[in-house]
Image (cartoon, rainbow, N blue to C red; front, side, top):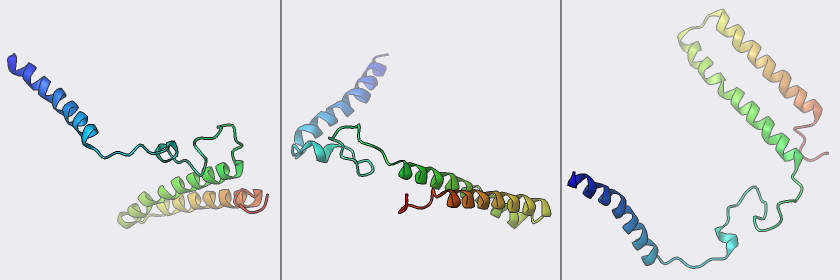
Length: 118
């Protein structure tokens, strides 16, 4: 029983002691708040958070994520085509790519992919 308390103290006390010693010994310079704050998409973290957000940037990011995930779904199809090259797998992948192309043409025609105009 005594060893359990000793092991618990070592397991908790040793990391705390190392953290305290590391904080005291480190040559940490007190930097300004801008250097220590997180950087997010070009926004100034110290300014007001009520600035307008670019909706075109958001839409382009969502379109990229959707198409990126759908392209990632093609990797198992390619590995399955190596083992099994039947017409069902080919037809499914063909229709999936046709749906992807229709989505791409729709986004293109809608103007979501045009970054300059708008």
